[in-house]
Amino acid sequence: MAFEPVLETIDLHKHFGKIHAVNGVTLSINSGEIYGLIGPNGSGKTTLIRLCLGLLRPTAGTVRIFGKAIPNKMILSDVGYMPQAGALYEELTVRENVAFFAEMCGSHEPAWIDEAIALVGLQDRARSLVRTLSGGMRQRTSLACSLAHRPRLLLLDEPTVGVDPQLRATFWSYFRRLAVSGVTLIVSSHVMDEAERCDRLGLMRQGRLLAEGTPGELRKQKNANTLEEAFLRFIEDDSERGTR
Image (cartoon, rainbow, N blue to C red; front, side):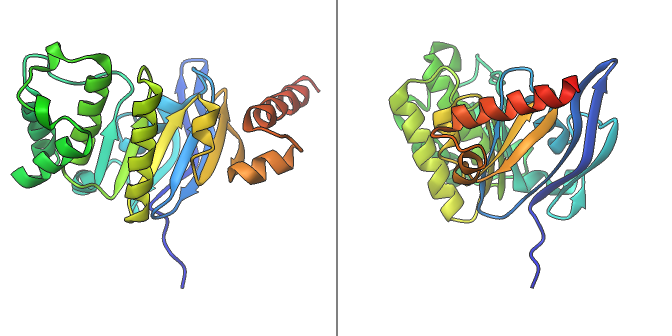
């Protein structure tokens, strides 16, 4: 029996004038998988995530989530999104922010809101205004906002930027627990040690998918000891092809 992918893109393009921010990306992501979009800043990761969510209209190509073409408001309650840039309301409390975003996604369950806040360890700051929080606490609040409606698919854009190593480890431990429960996660990052925590990776450069596979497969493909070494070799090979 063939299983339908949770998210797939087919020859996806997004052009901003002469800039090809996403250039022919085709990928397929399965249920319960942690898929890492790995690449330097400006490689197209954020644009690709926004296209997948329907926040941007593609120049060409198709996105499907749960088999439905995007954009589609009917799947909103099944998808969670944590943007790279903070999207919190500073004059609201932690709980008010989480409740607002949960309701925007169709959830009216107070227990789910409290659970999301507890999962990110902010029970004691639930009534604090967001403007009083540290950077790490804001990141935790953003994560709670993406979780409170219990989505089946999570798209997390650089979720650990600016957080300390202990909090980063906490985030990734929770991401793994979500995946084990059947939630699918797409996580963008430019940090190679985070890439090792993903089930599969898509290495991006200049809007294109250079390579795809498990961390072990990508290291083996380039006979590299580390993912960083493998990624650099993929870039070198890509640059050589571009100069021929």
